Length: 202
Image 1 (cartoon, one colour):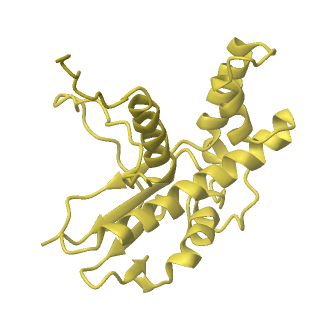
Image 2 (cartoon, rainbow, N blue to C red):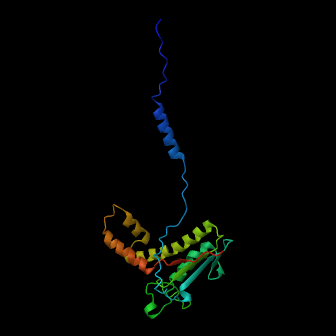
Image 3 (cartoon, rainbow, N blue to C red):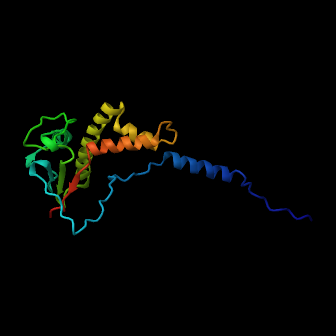
């Protein structure tokens, strides 16, 4: 009597099915992205060099308490109004003589910042401040610098500062990248991002 061979399962299409399932999960899965802020840490401070003396009017104090309430120059403020207040401070141009600002378009009040180069934004947080509030405040302050840089870049070079930075990263950019780097540096020097963070309060 002839031996009967055991039936085999045709597994030829299993790889195709596994591949289709993998594609399905890759397409439908949402990946959580961490929220954060891109920051470059300052170099170590030389203990022999004395820090520069700052006039009080050149410091814009922003405080966030443990209840996530915002105080700007000791006055309550909504986060939505913070950007405009920061722009008003940075663009004031209240200096005279060597500290005058010929490109500032602010009120030129003698009680506010002399020029954007001297202006410093001081951010103070409580340790119990929500991270989302901290991020929102940081975003508004950085956006104030970006808005002013966009304005000056548009005036000097006919395009926004954001577009200039995009062009610099673009591998297909046909212009002179060395000149573009210099132009970006000039705009950054007109409105240097001086954002100081004090030690969080307990």
